[in-house]
Amino acid sequence: MNLAKSSVKLAVASGGSAAITFGGVALFARLLPPAELGVFFLFEALLGMLFIPADFGIRGALQKRISEGSNPGQMLTTAVLLKAVPLSIVVTAILVARPWINGYVGETIAVWLAVAIVGYELFQLGIDVLSGELRVGETAGIRLAQKIVWLVAGYVLVEQGYGVRGLIFGLIAGYAVSFLWGMYRRSTPFLRPTFGEAHSLVSYSRYNFVSAISGYFYSWMDVALIGLFLTTSHVSTYEAAWRVSAVAVLGSTAIAQTIFPQVSRWDADQARDRIERLIPRTVLPSLILVVPAFFGTLLFSREILGLVFGSEYTVAWLVLIILMGEKIFQAVHNITGRSLQAIDYPNLAARAAIIAIAINLALNVPLIQLYGIAGAAVATGISFVVNALLCVRYLSRFIDVTIPWTDLGWVLASSLGMTLVLLVVQSTVRVDSLVRLAFVICVGVVAYAGFVLASPPLREQIQRSARLLRSDQPRTDPTNGDD
Image 1 (cartoon, rainbow, N blue to C red):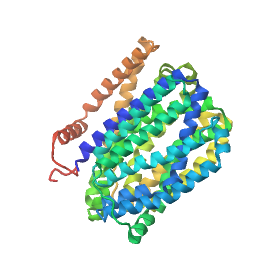
Image 2: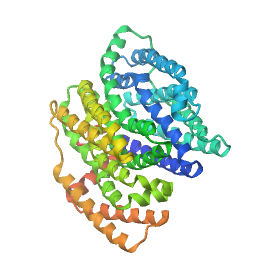
Image 3: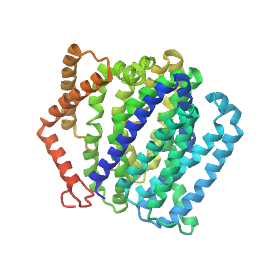
Image 4: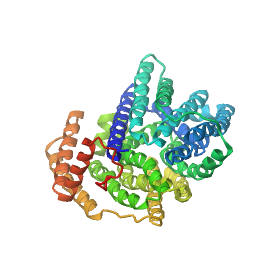
């Protein structure tokens, strides 16, 4: 597997997905009032938290075992049968709790929540099978298709008067289309399940389950608590800021998803030296966009939210700054957390997740009541900083984690240089339209790129990556030209 090509394919697809999601949210923010759009975000929050017990870590275990090359066909069938148990329990619980769920969200959507959970699990099953087959790049189009179907179907249904339910139906349709595509593209057959494969999957999934809690709770727990203590309008404004900040970590997320099956294979082959060479080469590209995004947000958070989503959303300007700063640590966690799982230490990733969740819960409730949505952002940020630092510490027990401090220092200096340029632009250009906002962003990108390319080591790394992308060879280790 060519890691560079797969990462770029996934990053491009993730960027496209984020652009579609971002544009869709901005569009629907104009078509629906904040309170009604907040209902959809609460639906997604419940969906995101119920994914955890519905999967119980089995999908991650399946990807891990298939990537090791151990009886993939039997693993696939066994995983599907294992997943049916927790998924059935969750669906039944939703149907039993329909009155409470409908009352909490403000719409009668509990039945569609159950359908969406089944659809999401099937969609992700196809993604994980292809990733386990070291075909991560091929999942890019599948991920993108899900977002496209959601946007198109959601828009049509909203225009037809379905309101927020139109967005929910579009979401479910996207899951269905992408699941069928993923199943068609897989090469792993369904073979007879065995108790041995079941034991292997469960032994990994019990820890992967806890690690997954961190990711999903991190994404949705604050939204759920805002919906509990505040209003659906607050949910909308907070989620708008979250969606903007999420764009900054698309690169690191794509890299983490790409390297997981390859690191897993190297770990199975006892090639830890190759993993040690890979980690520092992934940390830098993971941070190269997040750091300047934070500084740009310091200057234009109000303009971004107001011009893209509407004036009602500018109240979340501080939330956006806090979340964007937190994304610097999330970028590091994406690499180190997934690497821990890939080298078969999901228990340590789980330990970090449990600590972070406890901090998040302990801080979110009082801070939301004291400081509103800004308090939620602070609580979430602190908890994930702790999670990232713990994952770095645990990973360093098994491999030599080298951080490219010199290159990262240049990235910071380049970001500060870009900020100075933008301050000059801000003093001369009034950012009061989307066109002018786009112009300012383009100026910042050009200025930052110029400062980064002024560093010979960084310029050499970018040129090396470009050569890898042009190469058709399945180069698996971008740090070793002999592979």
